[in-house]
Length: 111
Image 1 (cartoon, rainbow, N blue to C red):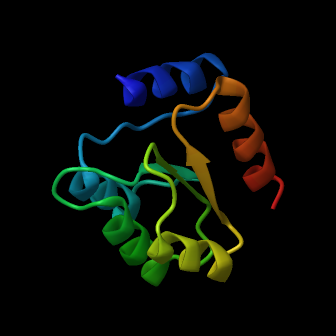
Image 2 (cartoon, rainbow, N blue to C red):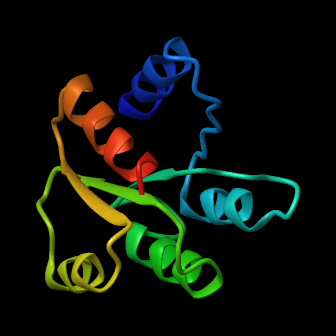
């Protein structure tokens, strides 16, 4: 539901949106050479591949990728380490407001 609502919000704001049903599909979309993403929003807990797995595999291929990681459980040490190492990764705690999401998107787009 959050995924769909976030997608609808971004579409209303004229962003192009691709929704994945799980971490493996997200990674498949990201690594498909026919796709181009300016930014990816990942949930920390996803089926098949979790947020950390998708994040690490994505950064291995695209170290300058802009990513927002979202979780209702707060940031764990592994994510905190990634946030320190990569300036283009941001963390967003659930629940979040549309304004909080849009502020992070704007911040990353300006990098």
